[in-house]
Length: 182
Figure 1 (tube, helix red, strand yellow):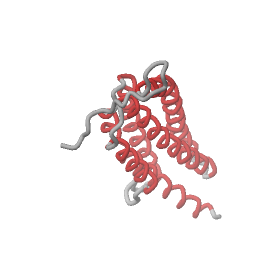
Figure 2: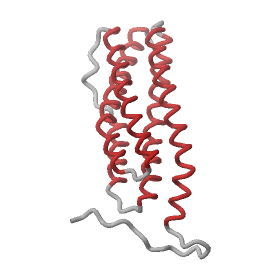
Figure 3: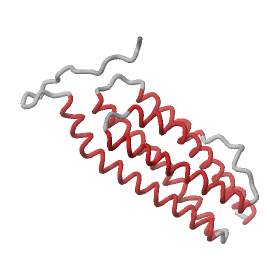
């Protein structure tokens, strides 16, 4: 691969991430509204603010490259966002919905971690140290968000298992949240 081809690939991958992040700016408020856990809702709201910062960092990198961030649709993130929307349409108890939202959010984080790790490595190979530093900052934030979701899941997943069982009997309560259909 030539340096020119690597730069083209780098820009293409950055455009993919830019579109992914802009999709998340739209999806995260919906996830926050769907959560019943205060700490989870707060986490989604905080990550929304962080995601807007990720978009700004990417725009800064595109300015450095004298390139436009537009022109590519991230199909991977589109699929992950759709899966998350499908989860929110399910008829789960509140606690189970929160567990499902964490699962969807961690899939997104892992996708982003892979993407940012890749473009950071390309930036380093291309000698773009300032860009690599900006990408490393975002990568670290994505890893921290994933870790926070893991921590939240410990309590939320436990509550989700308790929501369906009568204590000591192992029998399902049969409790479901009301259907969203009108």
